[in-house]
Amino acid sequence: MRFRESGRLDTSGVQDRRAGGGGGGRGLAVGGGGLGLVGVIVLVLFQVLGGGGGGGGGTAGLAGTLGGLGSGETADNSALEQSCQTGADANDSVECAIVADIESVQDYWTQALGGRYQPADTVFFAGSVQTACGGATSGSGPFYCPADQLIYIDLSFFDDLQSRFGAAGGAFVNAYVLAHEYGHHVQNLLGTNQQVDPRESGPTSGSVRLELQADCYAGTWANHAETVPDESGQPLISDITDDDIARALDTAGRIGDDFIQENLGSGTVDQDAFTHGSSEQRQRWFSTGYETGDPNQCDTFATDDLG
Image (cartoon, rainbow, N blue to C red; front, side):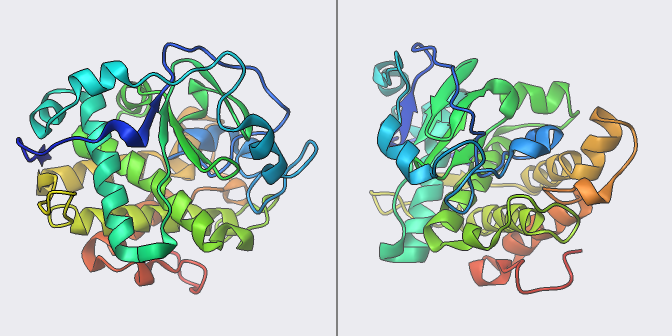
């Protein structure tokens, strides 16, 4: 995966809180689901989806209370602005590549949804962070909080994908992670998550359908990534290779519920506990989005055949 060398990067879609610490908690778990690492802690994933949640109060109230920043937290983008200015920087730096990914994904959804799309920032944090969905740590994996409409990620997660899960990794895999989380933001904007009972699990559950749809949405962005224009009218991403797609599919295969349960959990597969989908399902729905480039083909709630 390569970015257009002369492309200008916009860091305004990032809140860099890595120097601000954070932590704490309000008894509510993060919402929106991560990319699969959080499948290990499935009980806390979807408590706030659909506007409610265990442990007191709805998400709207929490969002109003916290306003996106926890006590003692600050966002300082000055270092990012200094180091992440062009596509050439994105080709040389993981954090600059993530800045470019965020810009490309949001350019795509702005084009696809028009006025229905509202931009969402991604928060970079280190170790722990306070969100409108409660406190979270890097162990939660990347996640989307519908209460404050922010995506949260500790960039060390990309190292975990390779060291813990054995994923091939790479710039496009990292982009897939972000595109998946922005898929959850799209679901929130469209009201799709209101179809999900957060207490439900299983191979055909609403939670699984939500995750597979986010994978499919990531695939639709990937299909258009080399053509969707930035503010200059040119694509920010210049090249996505067959190897990039293969690496994304490899990652999808390593973050399915069955793979995680068998390799990082009890060693046995319990389909009744599925909340993200099997490895095969996750690969299938990313491929569906990538091959069709059509978000309308990502309606995992309208099919009896999830793969």
